[in-house]
Length: 208
Image (cartoon, rainbow, N blue to C red; front, side, top):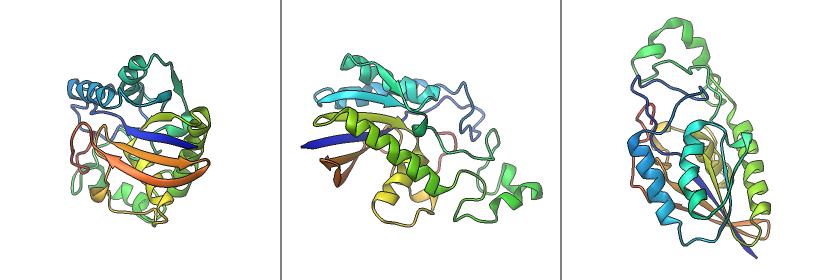
């Protein structure tokens, strides 16, 4: 029996300060982000979705809204889909600018392989995998959609592909409102399919 779990990255966020907002509350979708959510809803309109679940953060809930409404489903919330914890929340962290230029922050950068500035990659992968399997069970034989965030989705994908979890953030294949679809035969992962119904966006853009 085939079950598909789609991991959807939320749409663009209204972030005029261009900070790393992480898990901070109150960050909503921009107008473009709202359009991206509608575009994805149209793209999956013909899919056999029976379960929609989202990170508790506002931008994820808003992205899930049009999709759940189109399939007449309630939005479930799973804390395991939340953005990665990060000690630079609320700061400007562009390369060569902001917090990264201040010596007091340098000890946080001592181990990029963990990473030392935030939630460990392996913990992210494990919690995301738990959320995926809960969604798979809820949608057994059909399709589920989980709205999450760039780093958690990309970390889980690398984990499932057997790759090292540390990576260059500039090379993530996880655009805004993109779908990373996990295809299961029973409980076994068969393939991973990536698509960008709302188009490609730059992974280097802070606050996207």
